[in-house]
Image (tube, rainbow, N blue to C red; front, side, top):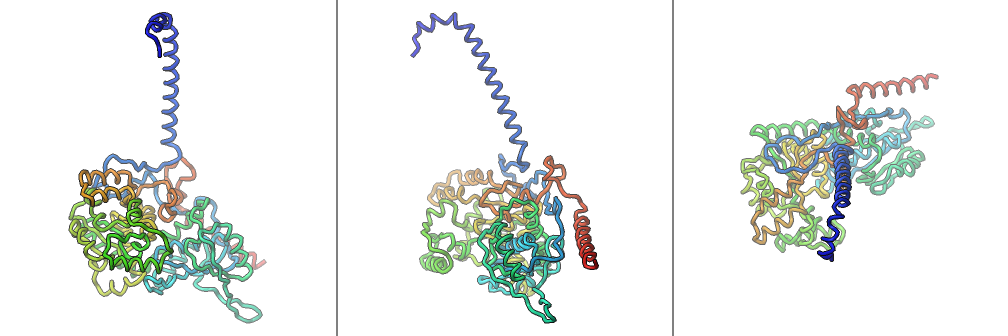
Length: 512
């Protein structure tokens, strides 16, 4: 401890040196401040051009418009040299895409990329006769095959079936070797193991083919090919597109509309292990479904809910929307299967938002009944949600429908999405159930302020490439980084010339 007498004794002689020391300290402080300011400037203008997700308030009127693009626009055309598929391929690639509509959609995109990687001819992908939808309509029943093949003509050769081989005057069908790819297999597996067998047998058959190619690939051109498949080549059959547009037109006739994927269904509730809010009889049904379809796992409802692993209830969805400022005049299209628990869960939601629609209530014609069975019904819901002004998934964890739609809406012009943070919202809803309702709506708003509403944002695991293809499948007209610049407008002519050149060289080689 400093003594007072000692301080007074030396005060006078310390004035000069103290002043100098103060000047030195102030100079150092100023230098540090300058360095921090410069660093902050460069960090804010450097690596990422994506708009910040931070906002001070949520303006309801702005949500009905597309999100801020930050100057980005969708573009999946090649930016570097992209040679056409070779005339002579290494063999034929068959795949069987399992799962529902959107899991199959991702698998088709992966199959095209795998064929490109292997210089293989792709046989039109097979769609699993889905065990849930009981639908065996196949690729021809859901997608426009001619459009699919034509759109990808610069990327891969596609045939509808493996042709017969002509050998010694006899026709012989090539038998594809069946293989099971590793989950999330790296490119190297396709260029070694799979390619070796393809060259030996002339064709390989990969089954099952869901999540069988790594999503994170350090090759932007390969990622852009996935986007060309998913957002350009995969177009639903004309009757599905026509019916979807009819529903959208009828909804829009009364103003903008919101779509919600209400994932409060038996399979998802069983998967999540969220049983306790149901009756004992309903719990038995859920537990039985879980035992039959999922691996054993210790699941405690309160623990699962606290970490955001339970799907939002319909009432919770309604309360979030009310907190954001939506009123009972909001028109909502529901994309959902059969809700588990029935009307007792829907009634609180309907009391908040009575203008609820689904494809049957909007369009109840015979054409709808005929064309919305199985996968086609999911396709109609997909298109109506894609074209909606706002889309809200209530459970985007393992939901392929929600995740693919989020990615498609981002690519479709940064269309507004509302993605609730279930983990951050859980304690607010739990407090409300326990009678602590003070500041309820303000607490929800505070959580939602940090939500991404459809703007470009960095992809962070476990977010899928199919949920967020930024920045690979986007470009900027006035980009500072050359890699982000948009390709020339005549890119199709460039690719067409490449195809013609390849064909001419092959013809000349044959003549020689």
